[in-house]
Image (cartoon, rainbow, N blue to C red):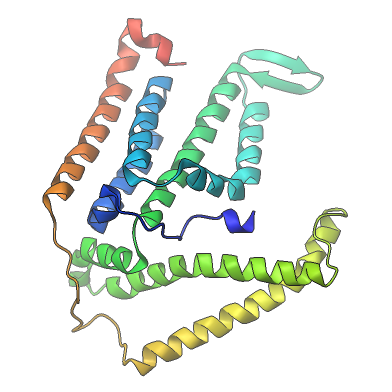
Length: 277
């Protein structure tokens, strides 16, 4: 499961998504996540599914590779669904002893599960199709207006980029440490919760030591290259919009308009009330 984390990884490919300006992908990801909290009907999620499916197709990233990243959040997903399914009050459709399942609980559980999955998949698509350097440049360029109020946007973008870059590195390091400990006879599968938690100590200690060592090496390397923040720095490859970026912006805005129209118009039309549960 450790190796199934896809957020922070980059999947090289020659697709339109990979060639888009990182500012477009940041803007699109933000609007897509916002739209997921706007829609509140089956029709809205059908629209979001079609849009997300089209993006996955254009990115040329295998669906199996994207979906395996969901294994890391399966426990959080199950807990969220269970809480909404069994603790939501409303019209009871099934009951055993004190366990009650309501119509409203089913609706909230399904919508929450879909929303959480789509947020993870949408965010993963951004990092899978954008290199850390491009992501840093996109963040810095998108929020450059904050420099006028002395906000260290370059440093913030650099920290976020380094954090994303360290995710796959730490995942690989954790996998190597686990395999080494298993070869020495460690058991991470059997026993109660307390025993399993104690068995993680031989993983966490070397992982923390390795992380601090990598962070120290990175800081030393940046100082050796006379890095002192973003003031006065220039870009070797400055970002420039292309025609495809304008088309992408238009598609993203059209998607948001459709979602907003659906959330406002559909509930008011009795013929379409079947989609609003």
